[in-house]
Length: 512
Image (cartoon, rainbow, N blue to C red; front, side):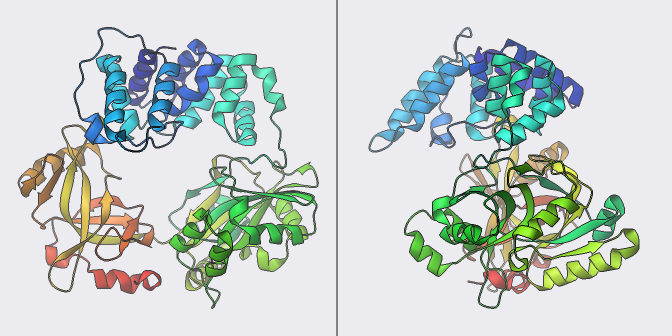
């Protein structure tokens, strides 16, 4: 498949808001694709590189290259060139990357160059593209959408299913089954604004602690235990205590879903950053385990003794979990009969927050396990943290935000009358907001290096965030997690903005 075809479809998908039209465009594309194109086409459409990060930034990408007169590049040729690019390391690597990027851009038409720039800078954002791709694949091949979705969740890879489906047709979906040792995409939760809203929607449900840990899927076959993350990475060698815990359970063959989390000596959760750092540590695992021991907390059973439990009601799956896993290793929960018992759920949430966790997940007792999807039968509720911060600077946009002032540098007030930067964000901005701030910040600009526009610290912006994490990058020693813009507060003065001290008072667990 030619890259120009993919670039065209990407542009058309981004330009339409109609889900049915997006799916139809993808179906047309898949009908034209070879089976071996699928593992490249699908991540490209979603704005991902199969190679991951390849060390190319705007210093290289910002150099203009005369575009090709006509399209010749195939998606597989582009993939091969990007793979080669990602292997470049050592002395002279910057110049070699620049040469390879220039060569690729020189073979690309103007339209293809725009697509590649968006892909390499992370600006290709189509919105729930993987879910749409499933529907497009079904439409293109005549398979049932439900069968494709189930195959994807059991394979843990949309690309693998797409390659098989485009190459062999719908009958091949039968070979994708739940298998111990092959991870599946986890079921995810939608958000609800309150416990009352969630209970009203779900009726009889379980209210469970929402732990700020790392999602883990535990597979055991006899004495062999494998551990997988939410993204299906194998982390078995990093967490020997989880392997030991799995071997102590009653069953010999199972797949369990849960979290791994680090607790302090009072039994309260340590910071997410500590847990994440431990799970990510690959060197001297023994020392890391002594410094930051982690524990499994299980909340679901997907398979037990060869029996696939995915389609069973949650109440029955939990009964199987309780049979295998002792209570100290199961997530704390409360059962609620329906809206008339909402006070029970509210009390449980309050207790959960008091114990240091981030909220609750409320689960319908009659729901199946919808692997790989945000099921409407799981609803998470957690307090929304907001801050009034000062905009210290703003970065020039690129990709579809070219010509706009986009990424905000956010600061809190310090005791000496200055400001400490806490992070950046462009999340939550509407097109109208982008247009407004592009004009507004030009009037506040005090310095412009061509990329970052430093502004007078006068504008207050309300920011929602999920928490804090320690960071050596910023002067206060902490950074916001998942910051997004709520609204600008032109009604507030800079001295009304939140302080670093108040931030630490709200999050004592990350005080440095």
